[in-house]
Image 1 (cartoon, rainbow, N blue to C red):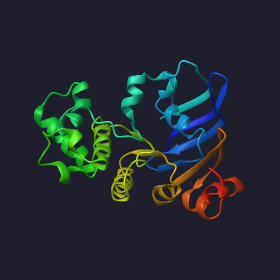
Image 2 (image 1 turned 30 degrees about the horizontal axis):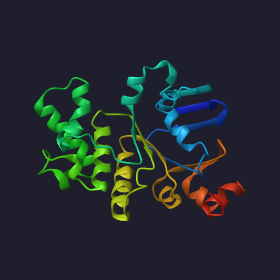
Image 3 (image 1 turned 180 degrees about the vertical axis):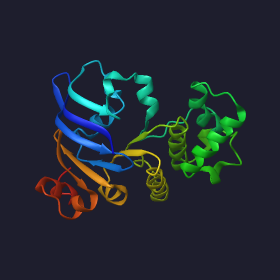
Image 4 (image 1 turned 90 degrees about the vertical axis):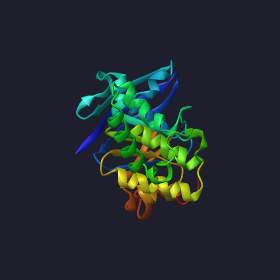
Length: 248
């Protein structure tokens, strides 16, 4: 099944042509890893999937992005961002307790039952591989968690509103190897329930967790294939050069 179908997509920010004639699909329940050097268009691509690019006043686009067979531009922004959650590079917990961080979204969507909220919080924290570490201190401030725990808290907060897709923008860039491994383990388990798109500058991470990998360069999609093929026998010499660290 196809979650996103992207056809002839071009994106500009003023005179900067950030994405050029992008044609690709994101498959349901896969982890699509997106790699490429700085200014390659990979974050612009990610932000297009939940319409965050529109926050830029000089944003324009052509082409289409279909989400579940509907043009994403025909859907309400709030609906899009509930169904397509995003986890950013730096964890941004709310100045609330661990419990209230997770419950915040469900409350915004009208859930008031204490038992229902407790169930949502527990389920989200378990899926984010954080429950065992925080179950006895849910009333403490989220700021007392370590950086890696805060990032998994932000993943759990995204899961609490029951999205279909999770977008990750460099979620491990500031984490130590142990915390990174826990986030990666969570992502691999989460693809059973969600479609995942991961932008990463860590090619080893892309190789570890990706089902398919897309390589972007200069605003263009250079190559998209199964991850093991991209990393062992890429078709384009530029992909091979990037993976081997010859540029980027």
